[in-house]
Image 1: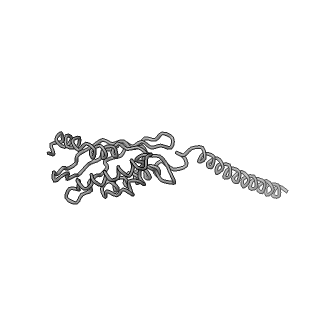
Image 2 (image 1 turned 120 degrees about the vertical axis):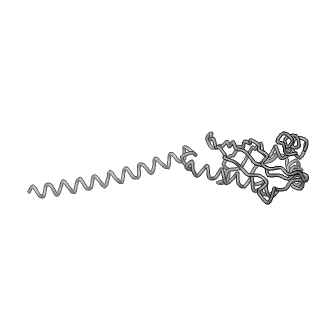
Image 3 (image 1 turned 90 degrees about the vertical axis):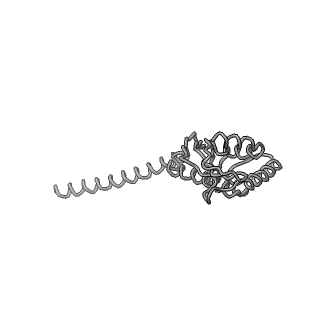
Length: 188
């Protein structure tokens, strides 16, 4: 009799344990889904988001180093005005015709990007090293401090604002600014 009671108690305990485990598993999964919907930051782990940001910056640097307007267009928004945008890409081509890389190295590379998050938007501070030969004058590692603002769009992070792009356009419009920087750096 005692053995039957213990056996019955064991079965009841086993059934309760299964019910609890099923309830907890589904409950936690449900909560996780809710959290994913509530917070973008919990939807994508921080390491993954930082990786996506760095890939976006790499695309941007690739575009600068190769002077590819199409790649630049996919990396950031230049202007709301299409006519102004096409003019700016012509200026970019002019800029790259005047510049080249030093000793086969990339013309621009990024140094230690620091990423700060505000909701879905990433703000990146970093340094760009410019290995440039401008109009026959060699420049090695002209350093500029840069700020990038990146926002999620279509599963990628797109550069929506960048000091570096302003720098490129400024130098094209006013080459004297770049020459002044080169003199200050002791390059010319």
